[in-house]
Amino acid sequence: MVLQIINSKDINSNSTKISCTYLGDLHTEAKHALSGSIIHTDAPKDHDGEGKDFAPTDLLASSLGTCVITIMGIEAKRRGWKLGKIQIDVYKIMTTEGPRKIKTLVLDIYMPSEIDSQKLKILQRTAEDCPVKLNLETSVDIKLNWH
Image (tube, rainbow, N blue to C red; front, side):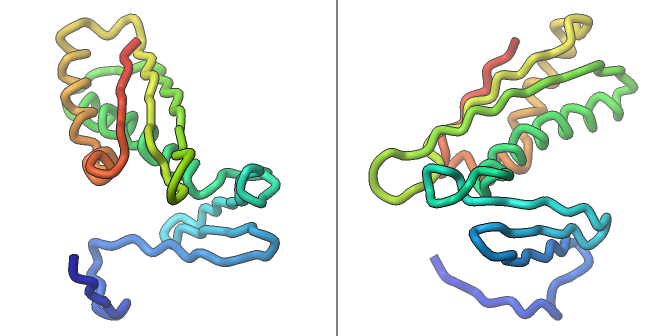
């Protein structure tokens, strides 16, 4: 693997800027430049934090769940389908030995009952192409359970 340093002035318009700030006592803030939305994090209780906000690894797990929902929503919108409520419960399992990292992400995906089997198959294939999933699947075990 080659590490390449890219100067921020060379980043093109196809990028998103997120400004991260350390607030002290293991708390951080991430600000989305385009929308101004702010997310706070805290180290988890089992890693010297207070667990008052999402841990950074919780955000990674959340990114996967929300990306799967979003990519299915995009597919449905393009096809003129109404999706109804989709809920995904993401379970993050950390390693217990060696370096601390996410070992497994289990997604329990609850689809609306009005989605027929043909649409469900299309949406399941679409979920496999979620950009976050594609980036993570070589380093994290990911399981999608459909309900």
